[in-house]
Length: 391
Image (tube, one colour):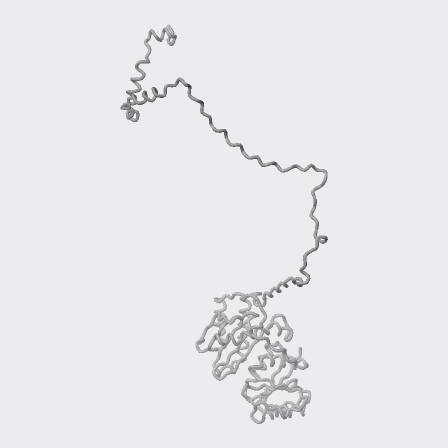
């Protein structure tokens, strides 16, 4: 790709630094020629060979729009970009109708500036993007991949030393502050995170514009108190470099060079997950309910028939339930007529109950048993006669 010649008109070095950083971001070769005033810029235009003119809104000897009008008379096809600050006046009354002049404001139109620069260098007409989505309408990228804070801290400390920043902050797309080093107490990190989070909604759509499947972005915010550089880390994180308001512009080239290098190191530490995301599953469509007029009873003729029992098989009746028969009631035999119940009762009353307690005394129980067996003993002669002992 042939390096294009870009003429920059600015009494300071800020515009030239922004152009060089944008070329580095787009990975486009270019030769930047600086002119400190409008008259010097017109002389370069008259010599020819320029592919683009970028001018500040206010120069030492004329206004940027006046330079654009004069340069258009010399080279009508030369594209011109007026890069103004937020406080610079807007006066384009001297620009001829149809001239390829684009008025951009930094830092609010940073994305538009890169898009216009890319289109102009390719000889195309810049197109305006569709309305940016609101923060609540940002695409769902799934869970945020984890970060090795220990490894990232070493990268951030080295970056802080190389660029001379006041503070460096690592955040994720949910607005959470993951790591911070330096004098971070002067910056409202939570407010800064909420402000920067919506830019992640553009990361998936900017790829087809700038080319490549892994888009990177760098934002520069120029303020009186602080200058802030923001670099995207994949699709889920971003790195903020905070400078004092008087030093950020002077360190533009250093911040972009070392910042992009550190951003790539952080991406390498995260791995493939830095550019991966989980697309939300499509919501299941509810089944349509039939209309009220369709919810009618099914006629008997349309109802499905149940299978019948095969014919030809004997049908066994269910077993009859048999209650268990109750057991027969016990019957008492009648007493004989000759039983003397009165004599039996009288005999029970004459029993000697004094020895009842001896039944629970082991010694007494042994004496009772010995006495009971005393009359049952056999003599030797009686045993021989009965055949118990053989002679």
